[in-house]
Image 1 (cartoon, rainbow over the protein chains, first blue to last red):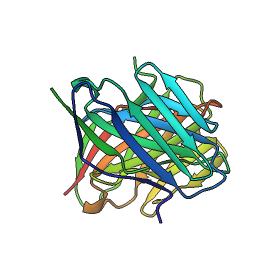
Image 2: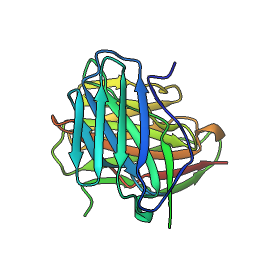
Image 3: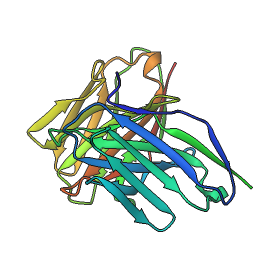
Image 4: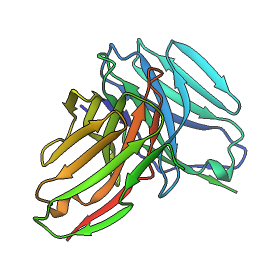
Length: 111
Length: 111
C-alpha cells in the first residue's frame, strides 16, 4: 500500500460547483498534511496546510482532516476554470523528515 | 530571481552518460529535497537532506547520488543515465514550518 493514496481522476465539475478531492494515508503518526496545486508544466505550489482534526477554511478552499480514519480532503467551493490543475496531497511523516506526496488528482472545471 | 533555482531547465543526454542537476536556494532553509515526477505517479522522493552532513535516501534512490555542497546547494547526479530515468525532476526546500518551495523543474530526457 502506498503511503499516500489519491484518486487519480480525472475529476470534472461545472463552474460554480463544489469540487471534492480526497486522500488517505497509512502512517498513523503523521502530523502535518498539505494540499499542493500544480498547473500543467509548472511547479507545485502550496494552497493549504492542516495539522489538527477538523476543518480549516481559507477563502474558497476548505481542508478537512480525520486522523482516526486517516483521511484528508480538500473542498473547493464556487469552482472556477482557473482551478483546473492537478492537486497533490502530501504529508510529513511521523519522523517529521520525509515529505511524501500522493499521485495527484487532475481536476477540470468546465465553463 | 526565483528562491529555488534549478539548472539546467531542460537536458537531453545519452544512455550511459553522467549528468548532474543542480539546485540552489536563497530562502535560508536547512531542508532540501529531490523529487522526480512521472505521469500518473506524482512526486516521488529520491533523496533529502537536513544539513550538509545529514543526507538520506528516499523512496527511489537507486541509480542516483547527491551532494550537499553548502546549505544553499544540493546537487543530484545520475552516474550512468538510463532511459527510464527520463522524467521531470524537482528540487524543493523547506524550513521549520514544513511548507515546501519548489524549483522550476528540470526536464531530463535520456535517449
